[in-house]
Image (cartoon, rainbow, N blue to C red):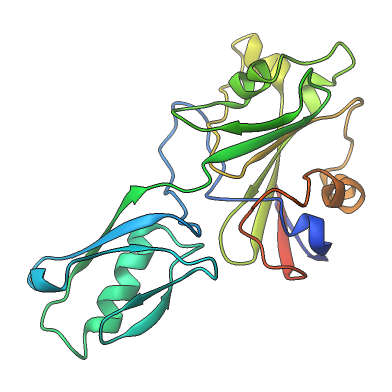
Length: 226
C-alpha cells in the first residue's frame, strides 16, 4: 500500500529525488521528465513557421512567441506538447504542437552508501541499479543487498522511495530497475525495516548540496513509499 506523507525535506533533500516513475528492466518504458538545461524542439504540424528550438531555463520555464512563458521542467514531452497546444489555441488554427528532446542536460545518477566508490555516474545509455553499483566498484561486504533504496523525483512536488532487492536481481529472481536522470541509489549497512523511517532520518544527508538536482529549496514534497 502506498503511503503519502507531507515532509519538509529541507535544503539537502530538495536536491535529491528525480525524474519519472519507477520501472523495471524489460517493462514498459516510462516518459522522460524534462529538466532545466534540456534542449527541446517544438514543432507545429500546420504552422511550421512557428517551429522553434528552445533550452529550458534554470527556473524551469521556456519563452515562446505570442504565449510568453510556460513551465516545462517537471513535465514529460507529451505533457508539455499538450500545454503548448492549449496555450496556442486562441492564436492559431489547429496548433498541434509536438515537443522533441534534442539534448539532455545533467543526465546523471548518484550512488552512495556501502559501495566501494560512492559518487556521480553519467547516463550514456541504459543503466540499471545493479550496473550502477558495479560501476562504483561494487558493493562492500557490509552492504545489506536486499535493502537497497532507489530515490526518484516524479515531477511537481512528488518523489518516490522504492526498495530494491539486489540479491534477488543477481539470482535472476527479480528484474532490475532502469535508472533515470537524478536517481539516487543507496546501499545501507543494515536492513531498512521502514522506508518511511528511512526518509525521516536519512534523506536529508544522502546527496551533496553541490550537485544540481531539480528541486526548489524548502518546498513541501509528497513522499510516496512503494
